[in-house]
Image 1: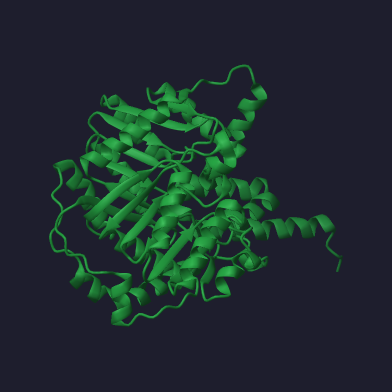
Image 2: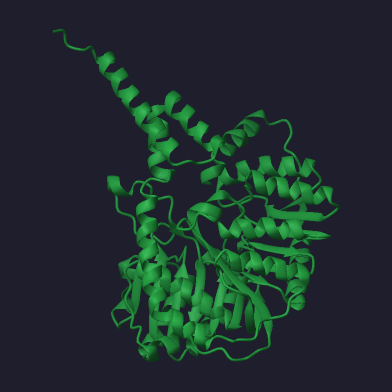
Length: 480
């Protein structure tokens, strides 16, 4: 019997790979477009597409979803009864359009709007950092932080040192940082805190093994701080020098964070504790401790706020659904700021339809983002949507990193999510929807201020190489 030649062995391996890969992708029942794209890639570029799939694809996502679901159910069983009995029984009165949006969020399992005793918008990094450190300094029981990026630089060390002082006073300190976004904040960086009892965990820490090649997905992109269960921060600002004008000068990023006081913070607390539990964190959950983490909410007045979250553990893509619903209700304005503008087909179509209905749709993106690939891909969407009548503006320098939306006088939103598939379906994100007219107008004012420092998007002409690169980058949109 003759020995198979090397090319026969190679062809057999190729055939086995293609059949196995196609079978795997078909069983996932993804969209027909995505399925066909993967099939053609597996056939034409088996090695490159296979490696790309291992890194960026949904491999082992089901297992992680199950683990995350166990963490969520474990937490729910301990605190749900108390949370239900201790929340405010009076619900905010909303306009008809706002009530419709709030119902969408509630039916997605995200909870009803609740009363905040105060909301403050913080659009400068140094102002946010000062506010955050003051809140840490007056904390009486605990401080919980969850960040995608926490750098071992001057800003990161400054906030860490405030937490060290809090821990020295006997305050419980728990820090959860992403295993990819916060790589520079290593064990040595956290030693001043952990050596006195502070707890630090990494969400999906990188492990260089075959089982963890898909490190790009299942990341926490959230930026949450909770102090004593009563004061919370949420928004786009990470903890690193680029947010600070003191350390970065005129190059400091333009961003937005919201401080929320009152009952909506309980939802932020719940989200933090779910990710903390998933990451292996332990904390006491007897009734007395629960009361510290979720203080009773009794006031039946204040500002209506609804906290919503999404992540790869939930196929409903709640933030994506909420944005589509919000745009569909718009009567006269949809104003958006986003550093990553790579809308999927439903979102792109909804924005175009809003323009056809006479809605003023404006989008501000950075002139130059922190990722060349994203910037190139984003420009192709800016060009197409600009041609459809959407007013696209380019901000900067410096870098624009805020993630906000204003819809009529109905809703204003501050969140961690970009307008891309990664935020909608691959990362853990969180946002606060504000239904109070004063907060909405403040967000609108911030938008107008940013637009004054931006210029209308202009198509790049005469650079065929750049146009080609932008078109190539657009192919990676589903994972950017």
